[in-house]
Length: 197
Length: 197
DNA sequence: GCTAGCCTGACACTCAGTTTCATCATGGAT
DNA sequence: ATCCATGATGAAACTGAGTGTCAGGCTAGC
Image (cartoon, rainbow over all chains, first blue to last red; front, side, top):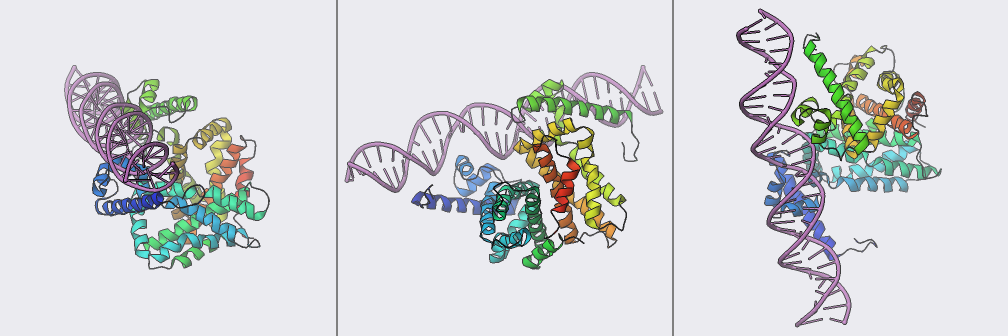
């Protein structure tokens, strides 16, 4: 999509190549381990040059976590679409349904991914960082909802961060249970744990 | 300290050198910017070899954030010392007084540090990762307090993570206010924001 | 003083990520 | 159909972080 929102042939091709590269990388990472696979290995396996691979994914981690950045904005949009009379917690909880949607759509793929991330410190760290990167957009969405200008309060920032903790902890437990526990239930349980008392 | 807890001459010397290296690094980072300073620069400025510098701090980031790892255990210990009849939130809130102690002891140094971290993406990420690394120990402490075995519940994990969010957000605001706001007040406010409603 | 265990510096190495440049394909306009 | 501008690719050189090895030197303890 260009800046006006049109989708171009080139962009479609790019997205397809990108998906293909990510697929190859994921397979290789799972078989050999993330650390063992070098950029040269990835490029060779995908049949492109190292340069090209790095143009599609700025870092090795992004070949795995590339889709993650986007999700933050998606959740923020979902948050903005929540009815204005919901309190922050309720709105956040519902907005997070957006984030867990793909876990439910393809649990096996999601499990393979979360396991790879969980077992790779570098990916853990990078995922944490990316998820933390969602905070400003989410806090901004809360601020807009509250109608008190574009500057999130400390409280809104805390609630956003805590909501993302709920997501993370819930997904961790879901992964640890090999996908047997229900992610929605876990997420509800996590949110319930925030209530005082 | 050796494994038995005794402190010998070598360890004292090591700690002194380490502190000295950290000081030199911090000064250089503030003056030139974290990214601009190479390990060779650091080694040269400190009058040691690159090898030696890397032996004291496994990574460049650790020259700044080296003290951070320790803090997690300190907070966990503080948590264990809280009276058993306190609920998780209250115990966590009080345990965090340990973490903010040095901000109050030497606000200027703390401000310089938080500013450097805040303005350096690599340090931000690494700090987030280290702080997240506290979670298991803190959750374990909560689990022990609750007397229901050594396995933290999902709820305890969530509360620990949320408490650390409070710390982070409070410190962020404190830094943004150039230390003018009261960190204790900010932290209380952050905890208050977790209450539903 | 001797020795064993360390700290240190030197060096070579791997690998991630950046930058530059030449080449090649393609889509769109004439 | 041809031309051209844009952008995708690959090659290569480079920087810098972090690892591993090894030899020499200092020091604590005997």
